[in-house]
Image 1: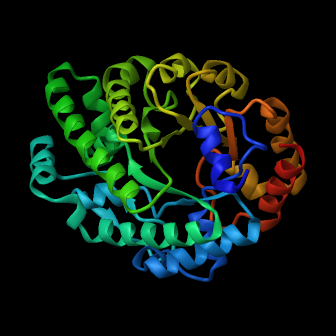
Image 2: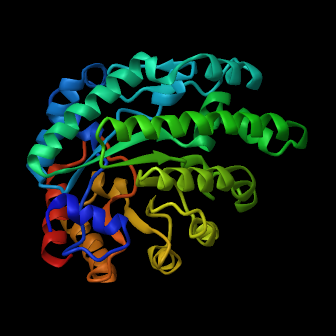
Length: 342
């Protein structure tokens, strides 16, 4: 199998010749490439240069394209900070009411927003490079409906509203609006040439909200998105931060092809719940990549290889974005271990 076939096999529930490797390393790639995040997010050519250099250096099976977790929120009018050398950040406190947020979404064409246009140009250039070099391109469509709504309202206010029955109608109207934004972004990323899309619903995990909240406010839109994307032939990956152990059965019911899980989720339980329903991406702790040794990474990677080898169901890598100062020897240790034991 080539690299593209290998990742498609896992996404399709098939058994690859070996476990594929992909790393969420845009921060690290910018640092290794000698550019600031300000320079990175402003230039498609700069992004392509550092991301392709990283892929060639570590010989990963694919590239996970990302620029920050504020791409959609900023394009939907959220107050956003753009530090020189860290990823863009949405302000914790947002000034607009839910009706004002919905009105903004409904009156602004997402595709015409400058940051979206720059991002789509980047995907097009990466897709061209990927085609010429046989590398899989994962185009991150930023946030899912739940996490985008959270960013647009502000984390604290949003979490409080989830507990207020009087806010339910407003919240569902907002989630429907953010669902449409998310769906549009997936379509744009896929049309630009990504082999698959991905998105973060980080705040729907059980480290942030209860399973009851997940089932009421997040799961219906996640299920709807999976169904719609599948009908359009767009494979996608959903990232969730924190533990998802209490909602593993729910994840098996959404129809999403792959979930990117972090180290707080019990991987053996996840594997059992996923059988016949979804594949897993992850789930090595990014902090271990940053502060651990190559032997630590080899141990964790070997454990995952032994658990999934010959069965499919896993695309190995960190369970979330790597920090900018992640030692390169730890990435080499991951790739070498998977090539040997995966």
